[in-house]
Amino acid sequence: MKYLLPEAAVLFFEISRLQLAFGLVSEHIFLCRVEALSSMCVPNDPTGGYISAAWLCCPSEEREDDWPEDDRPDTGEKESAEGTPASGAQKPHGEEDLFFIMPASLPGWKFNAFDRDFFPSVPHGHLIKDKRRKLDAYLGYVYKGSRQDSRLARRQIISLWNDDKFRDFAHNTIEWYMAEFRNFRWRVPVPLLLPRKR
Image (cartoon, rainbow, N blue to C red; front, top):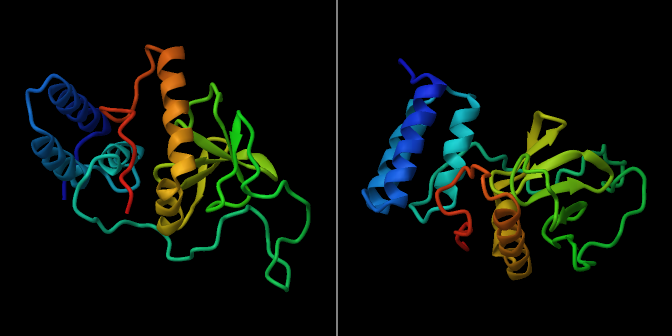
């Protein structure tokens, strides 16, 4: 099968996104285009993830994906024989302040409301025990530096976005980022349209 070049895929997506923003195409047509485009991208090409992120934020039918089945959180540590992390104490999950949230659904991860870094997503999580590891809050990919090295289970990401406290936190973070970085190029047409509850 022949695939689109990444540049062509991004160009088509951006044109479709602008047409949606200006009301030239309906959301249904946009989603149909995104569905078709995601299947025309080269497998494992980052462009496919970019497009999937936009699709995840829009209401649509359930889609099968490459999410892992394991529901245990990725803490970046090897487990001891008893099945608990091998070492280190951490701040109890759920403990929050004005600037951070540690969702109960993702123990070991911390989100910063005023993180100026946009990679890998706004907002994104930092592993408490290794701040170099970051979590894309929408797609569940875990990065070490700029290299993707794992992915959380789909249920964990759904649980995260079903959490009302996290949704409020994410909404406020996105609003702040939009005001602070007006020229930032978002990967979705409507950044404040959060993933739907499931």
